[in-house]
Length: 257
Image (tube, rainbow, N blue to C red; front, side, top):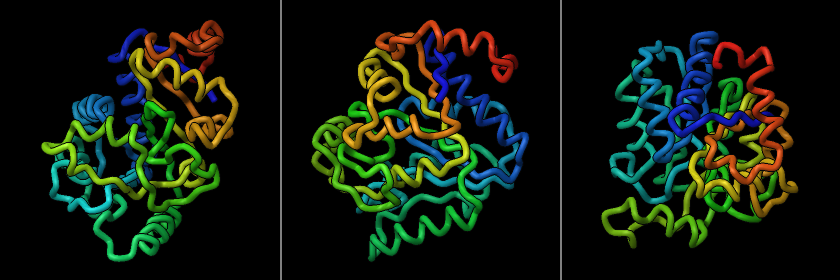
């Protein structure tokens, strides 16, 4: 795992966008794992502005609410269409999300796993960090070997996300999500965390013990995981000096300094 500390939120999101862009340029037929959230909107805005060729790119999203049609403005399908897919030249049939309206959720999850495998796996998986340390909707006690499945959402997650709904009570209480094990099979992982409110949980995720109570700690096991954060999110990290040294001295980061 590498931790890259940028001076502010804009610098962190810019670096994240540049790393995604580099993969699209070096491998035009790459498979990208996508995430949602307010910070990701900034990343996607930057990617759109780069005018990249996405015509051969395939994407798989981490998760989707159960019970929301893709046309519902609170669904992650709607989010991805409006914030990214409609603004680039990607083929919509190459963009995949779990189907939260499927008649058989177990079969849908198994199908999603097969689709990822059939496409050769995910080249870069983009992640945000939930306030409880979850990645995707892998809430506390999620198995670190878990696969795509149906999950009940914690009250913390519901409280955090329900404000985005016109009627908070309409927020689904369940979702489909890639499992921790599914995420760890990506060839490269980028996790983006910004803001002071992420400082405590980021320190636990990066420097704390690996535990199913905080699914992001499993990223410590991945051979190629880069955590990108701003100074505020990094404020509780113990090894900040070392992380800064990595960015300033490792040759791979020279083009981004």
